Length: 371
Image (cartoon, rainbow, N blue to C red; front, side, top):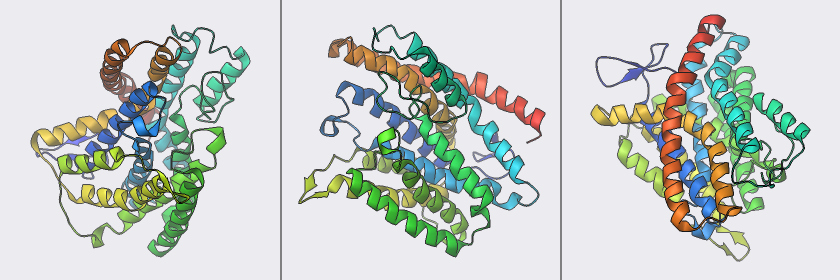
C-alpha cells in the first residue's frame, strides 16, 4: 500500500487508515536479515554452525504473521461492499508486478551467468517451462544448479505462492470465522508446526520439492496468529518498546546460535517452533502498540518500502554470487568485498525497482482495474 504522510509523523494507507510504522520497520529488518543470511550462507555452504544468522529463514514465518495482521486490518471492514474478485485483484496488483520482475531476473541470471560455466545446462524447454510457471508463481521443474527448489529461477517465490493461498483462504473462509474458530484453527496449526519442525529437525522447510509439505505447515499458524492478533487487538495490553529495541530483539531471535540434537531431540526444531509460536506474536503485538517519530519513523517507512522488493529480487543476483563462490572458487579476499558490494547493490536495486517500476505499475493497474 502507498503511504500518505500526514502533518505528523504517522502515515496513512490509501484508505485513510493509520499505518503501523514500526511494523514496516520490522519487516524491513527481517528482509535485510534474509539477504545477509543468503549471501553469507553461500560462503559456508549454509552450515548451521558457521552461519552468522542461523535462524534467518524464520523471517518468512514472521512475514506470514505480518500478512495475517495486515490483511485483517486492511480488509476485514470492507466486506461485503468489496467482493472476492475485487479482493483478489487488489492483492494481485499489490504483489504480482515485483514477482514478475523477480522471474525475469531469475531467467536472465540462469541464461547469462558469467560464473556458471556449464553447470546450468538444463534443456531449454525446462527453463522455458520454469519461467512461464514462475510468471504465475507456480512451482516449476527442477533445473541444474538450483538445488531442488520448487521455484528454481527465484527461490524465495515459494513464499508468495503460500501468500496467495493464505489470501484465498481469507477471502473464502477466514474472513467469516469467529475469534474462537480462528483460535481453534491456530492451535491445530501450531501442533502441525511443531510436528513438522521435529520431523525435519528445524523449520527450514518448504522451498524444495523434498520438503514441499512444509510450506503450508509454515504458513498456517503464523498467518492465523497474525489475523487473530488483529481481531483481538482491542483486548491486548498497550505495551510500547519502540522500533530500535524491537529490531534488536528480532535480530537476536534470528541470530541465536544453532542448537544440537540431544538424546534424539532436535533442539533447533524446538527453538524454531518457540520463535514462531511465541516470540513472533509477542513482537507483532509490541510492534502494533509501539509508535515512533522523527527520523525513526522515516527510517521505518523506508525499510517498509524496500522490504518486499529486496526480498523478491535479491536471489537472482545471489545466484551469481553462489557460482562465483562454488564454481569459480573465488578466495575470501574476493568474496568478502563482492558480498558487501552485492548487499548494498540489492538495497539500491530494491529502492529503484519500487520507485520506478512497482509503484508506477501498481498505480496504472489500480486506475485500469478500479481497485
